[in-house]
Amino acid sequence: MSTATPQKFEFQAEIKQLLDIVIHSLYTEKEIFVRELVSNASDALEKLRHTQLTEKEIHDDKLALEINLTTDDKAKTLTIQDYGIGMTRDELVENLGTIAHSGSKAFLKALGEGDQKNANLIGQFGVGFYSAFMVAKSVKVYSHSWKTGEPGHVWSSDGSGSYEIEETEGLSRGSKIVIELKDDCAEYATDGRIKEILERYSAFVSFPVNLNGKHINTVQALWLRSKNEIKDEEYNEFYKFQAHAYEDPSLRLHFSADAPLAINALLFVPQENTEKMGMSRLEPSVSLYCRKVLIDAAPKDLLPEWLRFLKGVVDSEDLPLNISRETMQDKALIEKLNKVITKRFLKFLDEEATSRPESFTKFYADFGIFLKEGAALDFTHKDQLVKLLRFESSLTDKTKSTSLADYVTRMGADQKEIYYLVGGNRTVIESGPYLEAFKARNLEVLFCYEPVDEYVMNNVREFDGKKLIAADHGDVKLTDLPKAEGALSEADTKTLTTWLKESLGERVAEVKASDRLVDSPALAINADKFMSAHMRRMMKAMNKDGADVPQRVNLEINPRAAVMKRLFETHTAAPEKAKLVAEQILDNALISAGMLEDATPMVARLYKLLESV
Ligand code: ADP
Ligand code: MG
Image (cartoon, rainbow, N blue to C red; front, side):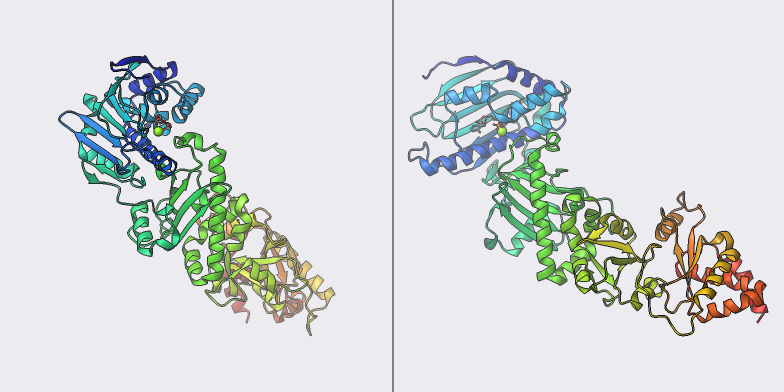
């Protein structure tokens, strides 16, 4: 049926409700209507492209697949034209007069569930076509379907409850939307303002977008092209544009997947970790697209927190175009995307580590801290992450590192645990008292230099079924070494440790003979179950509560050491002097362990000892 005179229609009740909210909201980001209309135009072109594959007769078949915007600041109008699929009369009624379509329906549903006047939702949902009424006095849609036999029509409305449709001659294929702007929205009739909006939201629309005759979206949707067609420079240019970066990226992963979700992703690792350089915490910034249309430039849950250093684009055809930022959080779809992309990126890093170790080492030096964060906190990806961790060890050269997997291959048949030591640097750990016992037994110890390492190791707990154990932990049990010649007898050692405990009193929790000591005469071990020595040092440095609690220390002595043999003789012969020596031995052990908190009493004591020489 066609009519030559305009026909008036009432909007469906839900549309009236929607329009009422859209028109009366004071929503500040009104500019999103441009994104919505351009994305509709892009959809219409995409549909036409598909139709062309199967249909032979298409109205205006030669017209280019492009989107043209024109501004007229005198008349205060903005026009958005596409040569897409267009709409027949019935389609105009169905699509622009009822709530049959996705985005607006979801919007109304969300409104129904929450705050009636939450205008924020407009920005999140876009509300599609109707968002034009935020800025429009009136909207005219000239549309001609791709179907050859159909006449063209103009649909018009001021958004107040009804619309008109009138048949019109001479339209080319597609839709032309003419927006007559409200007086306070005249900015959207200026070239500069629309250009700025288009650059923000529509840079990667895959069809040419022209504004007043000038091509705007020169950046192509690179991620949808095939990998082997893309030059490095193109990737780099895109990265710089997208991440607002000045340098080339240090790593890049371009992949696509079909199952379980259709994904095209292009991810970049920047050159520098600005967080490590002391700048503010990074915000997630991998953008989410659906068929080249930007859904959200910085979605929070697309990737796990610890991947916040990544830049780039994820495009999934499976997303509804009008998905909202708010509902994204509980969207199973986003969770699925998150899992697929994270797993793939971790696999990429693993491949990088095996096939290009130097590149991985460089990456690890800058961004390893994020992997540690993930290993400690992200249970879902922990196993993959722990494999990527690297440490120097008592068996590696300085600056060379090992993975836990390599450590395990070097473990002896009866070694059950993985040992590590936390300390400021290699020298501190190597000159400390704990390492020698492990060295003497050929046990490899991982060296951890970063303050977070202790926390990470505690959370990771085990690898490949083997517990991660701090080598300075009181509970470490080591096998006996062959008895050395000339050591104190067991009975004498017992006498000496009992005497030491008595004479050191509250300063030590326990004194015993050590199975860890090879050369050093004594060793101090933190005996506080709740606070490691390292944690205690950090708390002291930060002036935190808890550092005032008296420290609990076990003293372990080496019955083979000359000092101990001498002390055994002196403790009965010259008890006064022996007591001073005992105190000094404890202080020495505390110094080696980095646990001596007050050195003042030591100075006076040393003078006393020197007097007696
Ligand atoms: P959505 O895009 O989520 O479907 P919109 O409110 O943006 O919701 O658009 C409603 C419907 O109107 C679309 O689904 C489409 O069928 C139709 N439509 C809107 N703009 C155009 C256009 N430029 N060309 C053809 N059809 C369009
Ligand atoms: Mg839309």
